[in-house]
Image 1 (cartoon, rainbow, N blue to C red):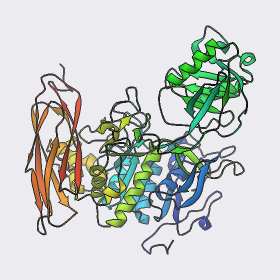
Image 2 (cartoon, one colour; image 1 turned 180 degrees about the vertical axis):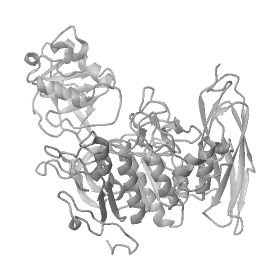
Image 3 (cartoon, rainbow, N blue to C red; image 1 turned 45 degrees about the horizontal axis):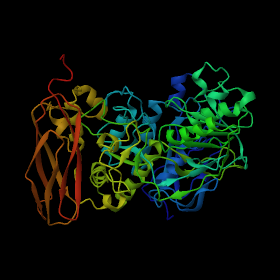
Image 4 (spheres, one colour; image 1 turned 120 degrees about the horizontal axis):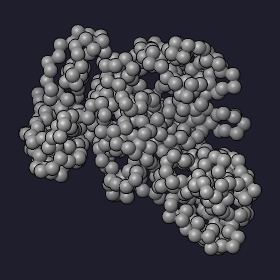
Amino acid sequence: MGPIPSRWKGICQHGERFNSTNCNRKLIGARWFLKGIHQETGKFMNITDNLEFLSPRDGIGHGTHTASTAAGYFVEKANYRGLATGLARGGAPLARLAIYKACWAIISGACSDADILKAFDKAIHDGVDILSLSVGNDIPLFSYVDQRDSIAIASFHAIAKGITVVCSAGNDGPFSQTIANTAPWLITVAATTIDRAFPTAIILGNNQTFLGQSIDTGKHKLGFTGLTYSERVALDPKDDSAKDCQPGSLNATLVAGKIILCFSKSDKQDMISASGAVLEAGGIGLIFAQFPTSQLESCDLIPCIKVNYDVGTQILTYIRKARSPTAKLKFPKTVTGKWASPHVAYFSSRGPSSMSPAVLKPDVAAPGVNILAAYSPVDAGTSNGFAFLSGTSMACPHVSGLAALIKSAHPTWSPAAIRSALVTSASQTGTDGMDIIEEGPTRKAADPFDIGGGHVNPNKALKPGLIYNISMEDYIQFLCSMGYSNPSIGRLTKTTTNCTRDSHFQLNLNLPSITIPNLKKKVTVMRTLTNVGHINSVYKAKVQAPYGIKMAVEPHILSFNLTTQFLPFKVTFFSTQTVHGDYKFGSLTWTDGEHFVRSPIAIRAIKFDMYADV
């Protein structure tokens, strides 16, 4: 890395097992913030018998993982216990990193609003270009002017300074309206799978072989051993808790030395918990049948293999027929490019936004399942410093890295322009040529509430052709249209606010998407496009109207030249629905034959006011 830029004002703050010598030309800043959480809890943290450090140092691996995903340098032969071996790199490997530690593992991952606000203030002061936040609130959400939504408030000030802020969407999926970090100035990221899998063979005593997935490479009994179904070895035969291997439900005398097949009946029981129950009862392996999901975790102490209900049922059929059922569990293999991807992760929180339904969230989707990245070794003797993690926390830094690349290529672009480039260039198609699907109860085609504009496409985002820009005044008028008072908005913006009270401004905020939560008959939406491509360009509108909706774009041709770089247009939506409906989806794409500037559309046609008595 070259010399640190002279404009950088950050420091490397010392603390427990961390000082300025831990920084370098890659890691150029590190601060930690504890006063807020101390004030909230009323006591100092006791780090005895804890993995946490009272310093910028990461004790649990989450921050290391996300930082390396965003901007880690090239590392050859990176792997997790021999799996996924290859060249690792972050989204922007030549970018520099500054770390602002405002959340603590000691109190269940606690973050205080005061510490988050202070961390933002210091990051803005230090001169960062991109802020990546793999953290967020749960529903019910606070309003954007409420002091308890520190991310919305602090990020507003970062955006005002030209700093792009990228946030995770949350892990409360696949349920509707669970998405977090919904402020319109944020880039909110959903999580998807990748095309890497870890198929693991299960060989039964009758020589049948079935495939599951696993990342456990440790203690395997190499030969055939006893196999049984958890219900057969229940401590209490009248108790259903043994079916999914809940803690304390298994008979140790009958389980000892065997591989146990468990069926998860819901998402309330996971493979890690089930493995603990099997291990406690003396079992030596676990086959865990559950609904299809790609997320994998290591059970560490015994080998665990995840299978779907189909495979689980066939194994159970063998167990019921065989006099003395046996099985052998093989080691997992790494396979890349053979599985269709991306799929929307089961856990990824879904839209629409419960706080501002007229703002489409998430904005985009990015890889967030079984992501290999740097990790703070719990035990330096057994860890090589890499681990698999899953979550929208992992998806967020992928986009943060892309935002850094776009900012490097286009230094004058606003955060809104960077978000627009990502949204309008994203893909809705998987590697199998089909629509991206979502891992949920129905495995349906993904819609904008699952993936926003789509799965990010780095190369296309660098040259989007056109962008939708937004000024800070536009965001203020959006807050006005939400019904917030002048004083409350002023406390957020630290300026004097005069609201125009345009109730339609929520729909007319110049987002790269269009969402109309309550369309009764007819609504016209305004947008403005800025040309960032060829000086002389002509774009034509291509419309994919949501079912039951008619769309009219005016004008349907936009001609840009040296003197005409900004052009407005309007879209009028007409409902042809005769009944009260749910959201339907479509798109508006502007194209010059080279660029395809696509805006996702979500519209709900209604016959009565959602907030009034029927």
